[in-house]
Image 1: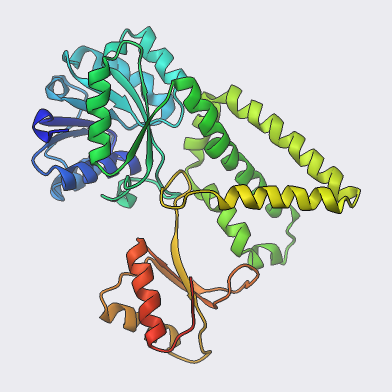
Image 2: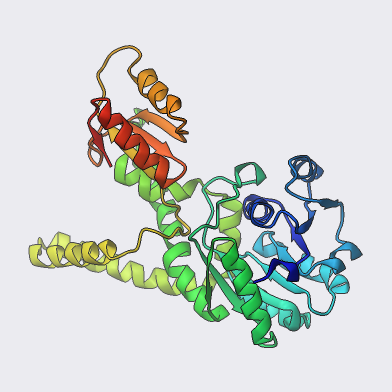
Length: 367
């Protein structure tokens, strides 16, 4: 897509995704004018000061009629309110999109409000367990699936142009129907979050006053429950908006759990081996180069001498090579990791560079 075709973009809501969109667009297309609305003025002022947006709007006004594209980055249960506020200010040719995690309900609202000729639903499969503008980055969409669900009245050429724009931001656009989207995301995003929440609450209820379970929880448990640190309000809204699909897939999951429990109870070693083998083969077939609702982490592990200054020495080696560290810490439970020191990075290249550098310094590194 030629960026000259897009001169002005509106963003409603500068949270994690809205902020990430603004940062990414400004990095890729610094000349595109970005008009933004956010319910808290502090965030608008911060984004303006950083040069991420060009014009703050303190309300939903006619200024948005100047936009070629408008991204509605608000909670799912707030979408209708902003659709109604934006309706009088949409110009012919404007594309209105959202970033919601459910689509069928939103498309029903769009149809009811007679906005189908403007609307292409959107869901970037990216994010973090953290929330808010402060945690947004200008690389959030790189190699991430970005699902598009065009309305029935949207022209094919408009869909193609919008898809090309999303692709230019580094994302991987995938066009689905709203029903297909809700079924797929219920299975790979919504139900896993419900399961994660159940696992965390199960351990919370089973733990005693010594909190040994909490103390030694690491490795696999922390990995598969990390998404439980996401916004409770957001996931409450997702469950309310995609109820049928989530319940249908949960029913299947409960049946599979029952079958698994039966195999364990009856000491059916062949069935257990079959279950775990099928699981491993399918999981090993996943492509790791794309991000999704559970973000890929770049981490290495290294053995460490138990002496004063050992961690500081490693940090100094990496700092001297201008390699930024996202997080660093001691692994107390070694059930799933080999090295005693875990180092996390923001991107893959620094992770590989750090591993190579530490090896040259005599450290044993596990990737």
